[in-house]
Length: 126
Image (cartoon, rainbow, N blue to C red; front, side, top):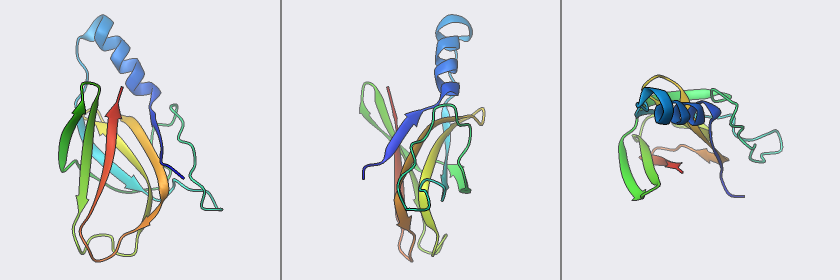
């Protein structure tokens, strides 16, 4: 099953306000990883735009790198070193702006972290 992604309502509201009133949109700053993206049957849960946080956040830190994929998409990476979170299973990810608001979610099948460096990627796609 493919990953399930969504842009949050908070992000859409901020985009609307930026175009009309504020002229400012908060920059992407963090990525959070968690373990709440699958149900008891290990099926990927559809993330909802109304959600404001991960179901079970494990780690949050500034993104490692970003890449422009198209005029409408940037991809952000978070890298975990060899010894971080060994034995943890990740299945959800959030992109978070500098205001601390979640702007995008991605849920996916569980991925276990072993003793190798691992990167996770999430797109901010419009």
